[in-house]
Image 1 (cartoon, rainbow, N blue to C red):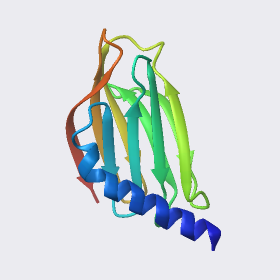
Image 2: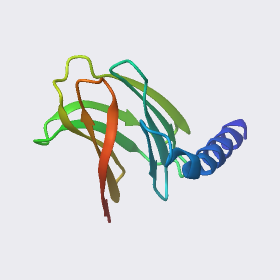
Image 3: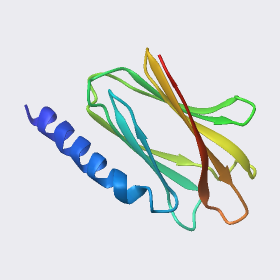
Image 4: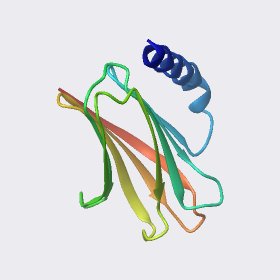
Length: 131
């Protein structure tokens, strides 16, 4: 019961923030039918924080890939985890374009960002593939 309440609160909070997040640089929202994720670049660092609400209790995969599709980081979020907090260091990555991918068995969402000399993640576009 407590887990369900936390999941609902997280989902409501992230969905409410959806309209605000669109205006904040360095914040990307991944909104899917079964889960929701907020990707934040920490100012003045090479760190990405990811907050995931696993709304429909699915097995999820979070991946960071380079522009060639090579997997640089993967974290599995299991169906018994209603929420997850990830912290990913980008210190060792050269400047360039990278993709954040969230997926379950039936859908995948990809968000691209550019890591540059200013140490800021900037969303550059969205590619969504569903079912």
